[in-house]
Length: 255
Image 1 (cartoon, helix red, strand yellow):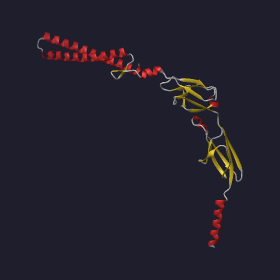
Image 2: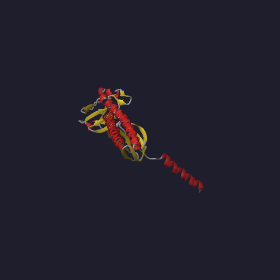
Image 3: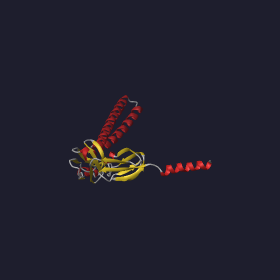
Image 4: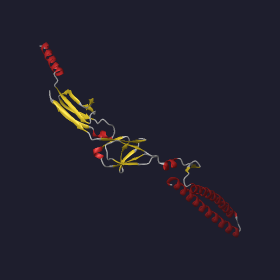
């Protein structure tokens, strides 16, 4: 009896291993040369004909041959293959336009919307007639309208004003040498009035010390008035120093 069951088990196993039912897949694409995955396994490029697969449901992914934004159009299809039957799949992708510039790496904008960095592929059918702009630091913007499926290769021109700004010598190694006279004047006024405020404050302190030691009413009034006078001048000088410094900071950051 045991031998009988072993024979039945082996017969069942052989039927499962050698008798698995299959069907065939034909996969094409426009354009050709698109990579294909079946159930996450890479099987080759289109066109694929009479590809033998197990009967049942399968997930098929078809990728465009180019790189870039165009790859968002990857096709993912589900197909049911019947035993000893053939199924056909086709994926049609929009006509791609290659966009690049020299030097590469410019930001591509459609109106104010950022699309991608060059090089990039765009769907001609989707973007036909739209205006685009290439922007790269240190170069002039390049604008064009997509009226043809031919590749767009832009030669970017250097922006001389940007280069001049980048190579401006610095004042005292810190401040860019733009509006040189105004910035130097503000710096000099700020330093001079700050030291003047310090000096006037010391004079006021000395007058106050004499005021505290004085016993003659006339001298007391004289020293007190002098103390208030130099204190007021010290405050004014300090205010001018801070105002000049604020103006200098504004010009360094925003001018």
